[in-house]
Image 1: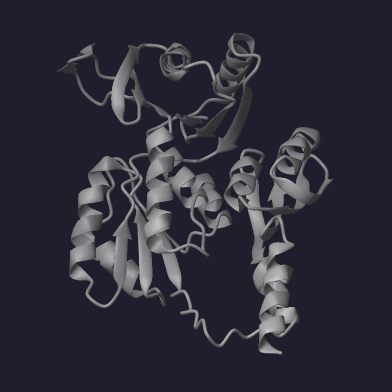
Image 2: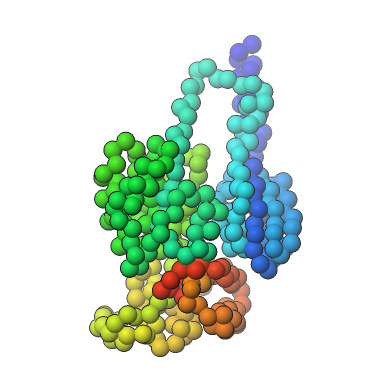
Amino acid sequence: MGKNRDLDEVKLTSEIKYTYCTELIVKGSGINIERLKEKVKSYGDSALIVGNENLVKIHVHTNTPQKVLNRAIREGTLHDIQINNMKDQRMEIVGAEIEEQKVTPVMKRAQIVVSNGEGLEEIFKSIGVDIILSGGQSMNPSTYDIVKAINSLDAAEVMIFPNNKNIILTANQAKRLVKKKTITVIPTRTIPEGISAVLSYNPDAGMEENVYNMEQSIKISKSGEITRAVRDAKLHVGEIKKGAYIGLFNGKIRIISDNIIDTAMDLIRDIMEGDEEVITFYTGKEADSADIKILKEKIMKSYPEVDVEFHSGGQPLYPFIFSIE
């Protein structure tokens, strides 16, 4: 009797081709629902994508829910995310309890990111981040701030995403001070790296697998940042005058110019390798609406095969932050 039951359980779970039932709502402006529908359908089956250019409901069965979230966030902010393991649900329905295999419950995990800007905070909240610490260039959170945030969480495991190379050391110092929780610092140097890493997280996987996947997402991430020089300087890329625009690729200065549009376009050309599909911009407090319009038109003209997305980030000091995928 027990043997037949075990065989039934194996059969029931093996019948499911796609493990995760993934549901969410996307809110945005000018959502291209047909393009979104085509891409989401390619990730699995039983796809249902309905809505309009401002709100879309997504339902799909897939083995890669992170890809669904990564694609959806390009259209707007994510809400009411539900990812359910259908194999587990099927086993519950038939009342399967395998006595020989005692599964240890996964410890509750939590995520802390460092970010600044209302739009960016909303993006991180929409993809499941638990705590957002205000910080970034010239306004880093202290070790105490991070420790306090860690201790406020009811979680045995905590992941920290610094999103700035200058905050990685502080995050590791906080890690050493916390004794009763397992702390993992994911060394994200930019906001796009942080978003990509968080989207790579799989709650059903172990920490070792998650860390590997997140670090891989960081390695392939292409992050561009546009800011202005606060003083005169001489660097390996040349002389920089105060007020000049600087273009950084993965945190390293690559472009210097007196024009923000030229800086952005030159940086994009410097980063592009030819096989990219999407450029996603996060506009800062200092981003001018006219510049946004001109930049979008220039990118679409130069790279007609690439999708261009703009989201309000609200970050200070950086008019434009973008990722290329």
